[in-house]
Figure (cartoon, rainbow, N blue to C red):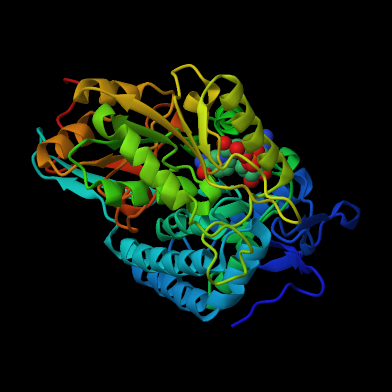
Length: 494
Ligand code: TXE
């Protein structure tokens, strides 16, 4: 099926207390498709006023509404209906996602499908969430550990996987019985607003999920500082993650952070090199490298580093970069001019520092923000391309001689989000998985998983975990209840 650009941009209102709400129209945000350079969406530019209204609605729904009090079965029914509605609107959601983010339509469809899976999984989680009991306490005490929803959760999301990152958080927040205020990226807010509408259709009570669109400052900032927000889940840059932590100190709110990465791909000489080359290339090109778990550092055992680099370059030249509305496209557009400038700036710094450009390295002429898959060898420690998160399809190759040296190199970074190991030796695979400091490790594959598996980062890549049973725990408070059986021993002796 041939897809077309919309004749006019689609308008998205904010969503507060079950109703569509307009902001100050003078400050609308017009989003251009980064692949086509035409306006595709218009969002409201929310301010602290709309955040106040959204938080008040979420607060009311939490303190006095049904959602935190309804049983797991009731919550699961709504989450399952939401998953069905996502599938029914799959194509519409995928097109909006592609137009706003620039990612290939086939990838958007896959993300929407996987997001539906997250909602289904979380429906199950709503029914298995439980506490604990202690029948072994001294002094006739009986102990009960109760899990309660943490309260109002602010969810601030980025532009790289708008619908999927939301699905890694919101259904788990809802499964726990919390209410939420969402602030999507000002570049890709459409599908988050659409999700709020689908949730209303699915039967979610008003006020449980609210969406304030707009810029990070003021809208996101107002959420992180808000005294009536109990927790913030932030996904984005390490710099804003840090400011989120500082802002949260105001009312000591809990913070979950998923931030940047500079993720190693460790390839040992005994690996299936053809499979590794393909996997490494996918790992750095997926979502045009705008991926927190992008495998942007190739650490290759010296004896195979040359042939592996040759194979990757050969494959890189075959990757289909271009119009994300085309079914065959594998790498779409970079999200905006600023991000494009950042990527090209790093490529220039790499060349000036003496790294060898093996392929790519340039922006495609013409309309749209496209950059070719780029590979550097001769990358030395201390070069900015070796240490900084570039967030583009740029691979840096560094050789290593021994297992210990490879692992030391992998861990020599402020980040710890993910790592990939390519080897045919089970011992090497397990030892490397144990020693690498990262929240997610892949062996002989990369960037895959499922709602069952927790995600999150070590070191400056974040705090806390999302998805799986570990993820839902983050949105609960633990209360311990001690009950005296058989009467309490008297304190005052008469
Ligand atoms: O992210 P920001 P940007 C990294 C990546 C990228 C860089 C910059 O390296 O090149 O960050 O991207 C909201 N208070 N990642 O500038 O600004 C903002 O509106 C509260 C990695 O786009 O962190 C958006 O909703 N919120 C990452 C969200 O934060 C604020 C994904 C993310 O935007 C705010 C994206 C503030 N003061 C970028 N300022 C990943 N881990 O996947 C902005 N925001």
